[in-house]
Length: 587
Image 1 (cartoon, helix red, strand yellow):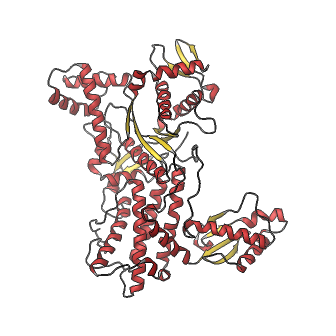
Image 2 (cartoon, rainbow, N blue to C red):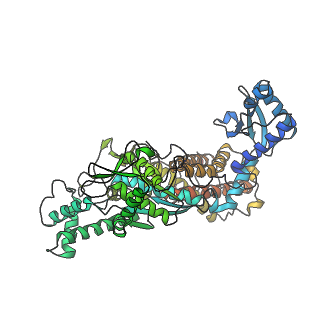
Image 3 (cartoon, rainbow, N blue to C red):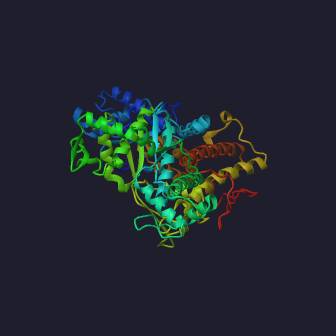
């Protein structure tokens, strides 16, 4: 099954690293590589054919960065890895890299770099100088991306699982835009075919006080719609008028529900338009002209197995009606003809069998290749709602359907979005209403937002006390040596690479993970490090640190589509009131 994070998806433009900003942040790794290259030359050692790899250490005991270059070179130069490492370290000791405190040899021959706090102080300056642009890059600069997500049939309200795809799709759009892409959000209305006929017949039956047909729609939301239609149109409405009114009413509800969670689409595209314009017929003609179709059993088939699919697929059924695949091929060709460079769709996991069919069909039309399939499909798993450990169904008006509107009636939109983003959509998710509605640190959304509120409260208390940060260039950042302070700066240093990786892998949950971790680090700093101190120099340094934290945290929340509140209610049992008169951030 194709999943959202299985691999870096193919994009018709090379992904590059972000532009270096001085020698701060993750760019320190580039400087270490440069120094390693010089050390190898000084030690008379060759550079590995595949280059020098420098990675962040997983454990603090192993330093900040490490390289396996000695292990890679041991065999080519004919000496032990530790001997190679000793030569490298000796050369580095003779010409120490900037911000490097020491280099140690570990295990079979790893070189571990321990950095001085100065590199993190440079990170702080980088964050403040970049402001809202911190972490942003140009990996996809100039790339026009069409991102289609949600796209439920216009036959009723959006279900809870669709709400998950709403949050993920919008966050992916934000991630791609943060790397320079021009992202177009699109909703595909499946308004052609028999499902709308069945919906219209079901609504008309409810309107007349009758039960829907057996193969129709039985959700109780139809009763509410019938009441609204009777109020608006009166008591004598035809079946055709009912179908038309119901279609537009559902689309209006979809727009309203999506607006409640902060998602707005640039285009609502009608499938029916593809048929009316002749786009579907043109696709069939082009596939036939290319020798990609044949007739069998009264139907028209696509020779999709020859292109890599599991089997051939029906394009036109025996009754003359076209299949979803035929419309999808016309729709995706239309997107490309509108000038988009790359297409991304988010579908439910139950459609995994249709992914390859669409991609090989587009290949038959001349788009994409085996190595770079067009379009890119992300599959989302279902959501299970629980309260008190029990499965719940919230909706009376929608029968067995749990709707996004039902969730938003109980859960704040920010909470809803971030809760949906805590896991990759390729994994099943349990949405626990007791947790996400709790005003406590057990609520991961409240926990994150409260960190931003605490930052704002520090600024208010400083202003009330007449304390200012001063000019950053005049501040003694060298005073920031507490492990809690350095831990925050390490997280800020990692943030730009988190954004790049999350964009490449279409995985906004990686940003959500960073946000939770950063909030935890800030709460620890708030507890252990008083900001407004008796030392004016230390106070100014810590005020600038909290400003850098505000920039990073607010930007990450914006990527996720979550607000960054400046005031929140006091937590029971928590000594720190975000709007308190005095700072009580020490244990």
